[in-house]
Length: 59
Picture 1 (cartoon, rainbow, N blue to C red):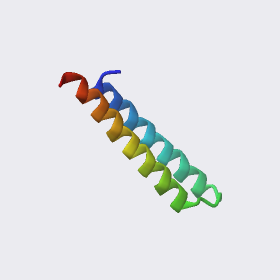
Picture 2 (picture 1 turned 60 degrees about the vertical axis):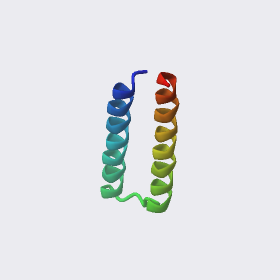
Picture 3 (picture 1 turned 135 degrees about the vertical axis):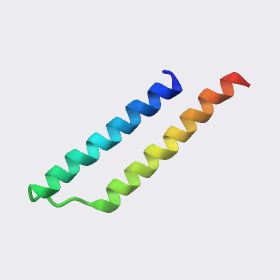
Picture 4 (picture 1 turned 90 degrees about the vertical axis):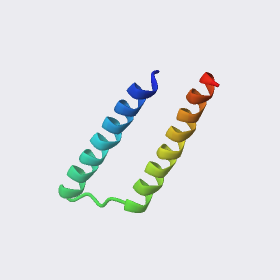
């Protein structure tokens, strides 16, 4: 997958999931915000590692 396409898809996926989670929270479901932060941090670091892996192909 192209790096630019990956960025667009990841941003849309994370944003859409956060909108869905906020809708669930407004409906009365209790959300563990610490777990959501942890998952987003792991996804961010995974994205950075994927970006570095793709960039090393050009070296």
